[in-house]
Amino acid sequence: MLKIGDLQLANWLIMAPMAGITNLPFRMMVKKMGAALVTTEMISAKGLVLRQERTLNYLKTCEEEKPLSVQLFGSDPAVLRDAAQIAIEEGAEMIDINAGCPVKKVVKTGAGAALLREPRNIEKILTAVRSVCTVPLTVKIRAGWRPESPDSVSVARLIEDCGVDAVTIHPRFASQGYSGIADWSLIGKVKDALGIPVIGNGDVLQPSDGFRIRKQTRCDAVMIGRGAIGNPWIFKHILLMEKGADPSPPTVEERKGLIMDHFEALSATVGKSKAARIMRGLLLWYTKGLPFSSNFRGQITSIKDMESLVSTMHAYFSSLEEIQS
Image 1 (cartoon, rainbow, N blue to C red):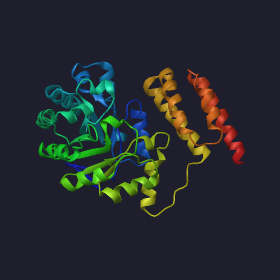
Image 2 (tube, one colour):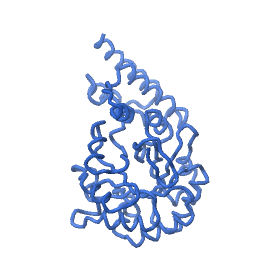
Image 3 (spheres, one colour):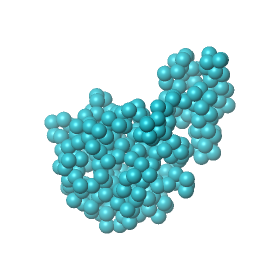
Image 4 (cartoon, one colour):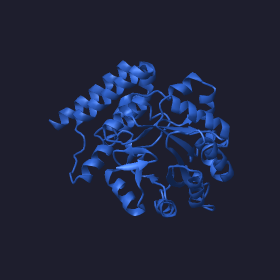
């Protein structure tokens, strides 16, 4: 059990916010697999305040996925304050401020990881948001802007002083992007410095990694990102291992069934055309490491319609079932 602010979570596993990935169907899927908390894609605070339809759609939720954390990005304290209010009105049970995204189009606006270079603005943002935020408030940061200036501990202390309920740290520097290896020791340093819950994130790709990161850093919770793409079973397997079980990989039939459920949920949410584009990319992850997967991936790269994609997928999984029989 984990408590963040006044929100009690069922366990210590959290799904990371991921652009283009953590839409409602995906969140519902990992929730069923055991994730205690799911997070929206990174949402533009300015887009929410302007009531842009596409941005507001990111807030769509349902009772089955709750509790839901909404991650906001921006650099203007007043805009982020107002965006947080809108998100809460639309059902958010936690607000997360992004101070770690290294993507250029985000950073160039002064948002995301760029905030690590402006700690005074972080303070202004959190003071403004905290003044209206009636739900738990969290912040996600990186190790710092670049290795020459590791400032995760000082930034995390500032964040705690602003009344934030928990901090997530991805221990890569913004200048690294997603290259190199996450330095989990930095999570431990932040944990030692704070009194609020610390959530560890980065390179949790296998169930065993979830236990290793907790043991090495003593973090209160683990946030899983890329490790859950194509393998949402990672949450279920970690929880089973915690109970002493030795979970088996999903069977071909189980994998195919989950993919089809994902297809159908996406189609109902965004339409068949867009669902086909999204699933074409996700199938690369779902089939990674399976026999003849490289040939299958080559076949689907140019497919644009749902019917052809489903037909090709059925043919591929049928061949796998024949191999196993």
